[in-house]
Length: 201
Image 1 (tube, helix red, strand yellow):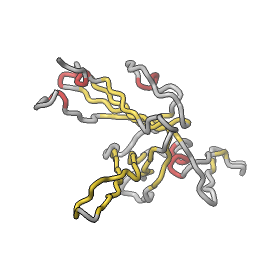
Image 2 (cartoon, one colour; image 1 turned 45 degrees about the horizontal axis):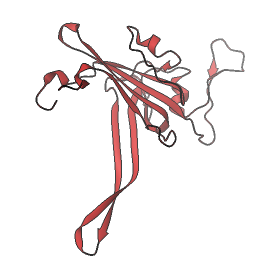
Image 3 (cartoon, one colour; image 1 turned 90 degrees about the vertical axis):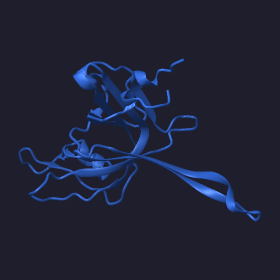
Image 4 (cartoon, one colour; image 1 turned 180 degrees about the vertical axis):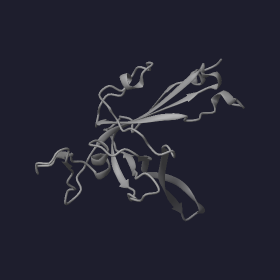
């Protein structure tokens, strides 16, 4: 319902990012344990305090006419839907995700606890599914609102510089962009456990 309603203000107090093979089914349950709900997905772990930046950009091309100085019509030429975030953990899941595929392997040189990741000579497509979940706990903790945003197919399209210094934790900053999942299928989906979306008469 339109109008002032503070119950509809959302603060992403805490959240998680999950990755899986492209096309992996999104969770349908909202249980007490999110890790159980997201079975089959990999938790990407800690992210920076900036959280996640959601971006939707539609590009329109103007149709001009001789009879008017203003456009008479617009055509949608592209849609860019992406999530930007920075991972704080370095491990066998996050490093290949940031770098664009491949895998971490045990180093062939006989050394204890030594592993190797080789960066490919040229980039390859690395399509993944990405899931975002955040929770907003209302005053008193009695009401918990959960939002999920699922991209069934996408890939990392930009990566930030990795800064290595003694004053701050190194971060794996990425932009993950949604890709078409086939005709008639959604580019991404919001799922909300939130009573504020119930229609009122």
